Length: 481
Image 1: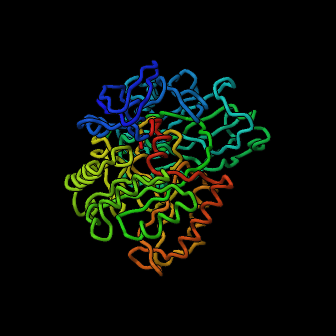
Image 2 (image 1 turned 180 degrees about the vertical axis):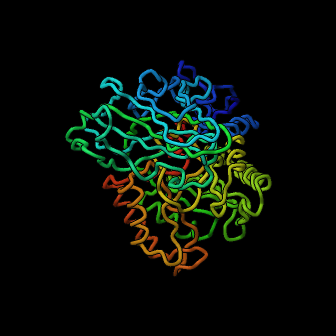
Image 3 (image 1 turned 120 degrees about the vertical axis):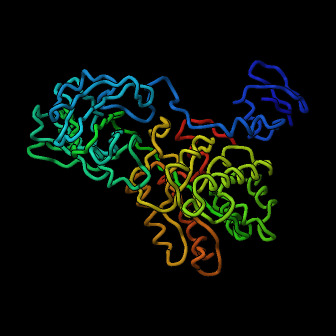
């Protein structure tokens, strides 16, 4: 990338790049220097590069995982020697359909077939479990070509060869329990089973966890008139990390500058402000947007919220995507050229598979929805790039009329303490002397909320961060201011 130095800096090789020097350097180095304010890019090279950034398919070698361990390797089907299926069904290793760069286990089901298909292990050496595992944070990545035929899984673990006594998992095990309605056939769905439940004469959990050495996946199969294929991409446990909580503000209001930002500075709370260009007026100007981005505290960033309040349902994918691009170009013209302009907040929370695909292909790094169920928000496998998590991020609370401080606290606790999700947002808008349906929240409740959020973060309950920092960490990217 071609840049101009705004301050003296030495390269890794010891060469001095003096202030005013124009030079071509490695993109990663250029992004770091531009982000820290010691260089500027020349021409549109950086805009072009950033506009085409997408989450990497993997951050290490094929099949490498971080913050996760496989209970049994999906890419080695020889270890999955416990198999049963309706007549005509077959299990194979698929070297063409990959998950995180490695082969997957494939089940092919003929048309008009019903019953239960299963695959698992029978030997002690074929299922490796974490020491003193409590059965939580299991992950199963499944893909189905027909969600009517197969839409969920039934995982079991036991030390009993026949699995007559075993542990089963409930909750997010089928499509009906997945909170996001935009999952479709051929999408990877990373299910998150809940607490293990004893079935039959299962040994005590977790006291006999070391004996839980066999596992099985069972797939209920519903008859459909066409052949169906199902893939298993991952079966394992993810590391539970400190949850990330994001203060996310939408649209653009004078109250941000006059009220919210001073409070956020006082409590040292990072925040992401998603601007709609239609909200730029005499009370909230382009200069205000630049001031948020350039705030000396370094706490804030400016993100993308399109042009107006017309959502995807009204505009359709093509027109809506054009507004996403318009907002990104406008923010870029203001000198905001880091990750944040490639993060979009869906207007009114509306989205569809077509606009998700356009956003991904157009270089948008993530998109945020509105309040929905907190299932499926662990982000430890997000960097594989094979699930829609990045484009379906939820908020846990949207303060406005009728939402008390206790309501907000309960919602945050559900997301961060009870569920221990990897990432969630509080979706704020405007503020006033009293609540309104705008939505706006009262000054006094926001002030109390900031004090409470700071105290919880200081106590280690969650980490307060910005939208682009959180998603960069989850996807394995180097964050750029």
